[in-house]
Amino acid sequence: MQSNVENLGALERRLDLSVSSEKVNNEVESRLKRLAKTTKMHGFRPGKVPLKIVSQKYGIEIKQDVLGDELQKKFDEAVKELDLKIAGHPRFDTKESSDNDLEEYRFGVIFEVYPDIKLGDLSKQNIEKPVVQIEEKDIDNTIEMIRKKQVQYQPVDRPAQAGDRVSIDFHGVIEGKDFAGGKAEGINLIIGEGSFLKDFETELVGLSVDQDKSFDVVFPEDYRSKEVAGKAVTFNVKINEITLPVLPEVDAEFAKLLGVPDGDVEKVRVGIKHDLEREVTKRARTKVKEQIMQCFLDTTPIETPNVLVNQEKERLLKEAQENLESQGMKSKDIKLTPDMFKEKAVERIKLGLILSELVKVHDLKATPEKVRSIIEDTAQNYENPEQVVKWHYASAERLKDAQALALEDNVVQWALEKVKLVDKTVTFDEIMGIA
Image (cartoon, rainbow, N blue to C red):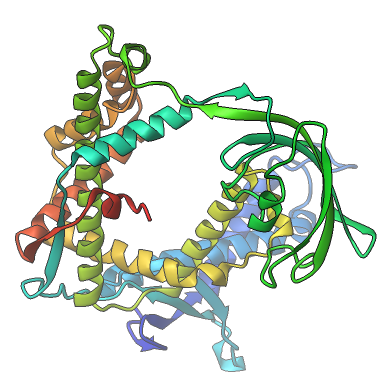
């Protein structure tokens, strides 16, 4: 067995293989004979086509198949003998044969191997654990958000004010000419909310129903539409309707609307606090987990096989395209390339290799109890938790997702015993990312 492996780079290798031409020719002849017994061809009875004709038609294809099979077999034997950990698929290149070398076919095989991973020391790594105290104002703000979602609009017989919702028709022109998106009817906007340019919304204050007005608005230089960016647009606007947003009172009816049958508002506040604490706990865990993963990357530098990175780049590209299409956009209209996702792909491959090594070295298994806990926790977000739990266990694929999360949690828990955990007090708005 050939055992000389040439290093072509950090993880790229080359191995020379040879296959006996006599062995190949014998196998080709054997396959042709078997094929001839079933070959159908015009002018001959089934199974009576001459071997020479069968060879002329199928010989090259069969020879390629035989060579491929023999090469793969030789390569598998070499991989086992040399204890190589192959990443992706090998690439076989034909080598030139001299006149003295015709008794064998010679090939070079180029492939990548997985990196040797030496797990880093986490003992000097600091991890900040967010600590959040839910305050009364956080509950008040949440109630206010719920009220806004239940808003009702009442028509008013007066000129428009800031905070009103108005229905408008508008027509904008640049130097007397129309432009894309410059005309619309029946558009609703709340004055002062910022869905339109501030200067546009300000001009609506004081207008009454059926009243129209012409005014100029200069668009910012960095406006998303280049057609109007930095230009003065003359708008003619007509008010169709003025309505006043009315929020529900925080009373018994409001409480019943939120699922409290007896209308006790205090129970609403208790329930909201519980939900906020649950969400905060989840986000705190996520932030700790993100830091742990970064610690793995920082303390265990490794090379990544290009073949795996390229596969991940393509996967991320496809994921992005599907996401765009789900939002109603056409991915072909947005130029995305695999290289745009290279940095993220490299990070994901590195992290995956490190986590696999950790799981193997420290025997971090996903226990059935942990898997069950994760599924039950997820199920709490639904109306019928028991049905959701059954739904997960009814599919091996869905169960596999929960097992992966359980394994990841075990890795994080293992790491938390190695790093230095430091409590960091943050506000509810900070952990929620509310500006």
